Amino acid sequence: DIANELKAGAAASALAPKLYYDVYLAVTAELRLLEAYLSEIAASGASMLSIYERVQWTSSVVPRLYLLVTVGSVYLKTGQVSARELLRDLIEMCTAVQH
Image 1 (cartoon, helix red, strand yellow):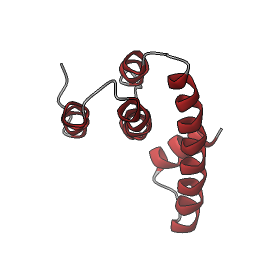
Image 2 (tube, rainbow, N blue to C red):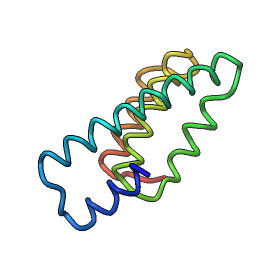
Image 3 (cartoon, helix red, strand yellow):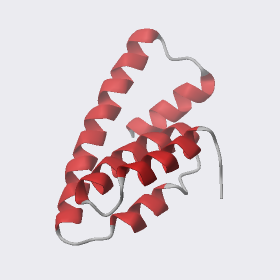
Image 4 (cartoon, helix red, strand yellow):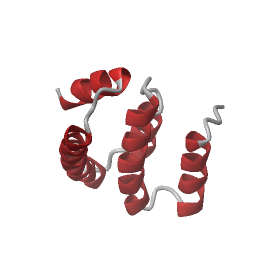
């Protein structure tokens, strides 16, 4: 629900600063919950690479970047990827380089 409100508000560019801040707080709270959930999944032996790659298919750019950073932080903590490789990929995503 929050994601839809953010997307609708951002598309209309109608978010007042106070509302934008409230949405930001709600989104970051949800991302912390997602990070905890992903940590549990990673601890059970799931491949974070497949989750990281799946997130890259998110159609909206800003939500994709938030999700990539969240999933990427868990991915890095698992030791399944080097920090250099992950950061290079995130930088490419930020500059809109696509393979």
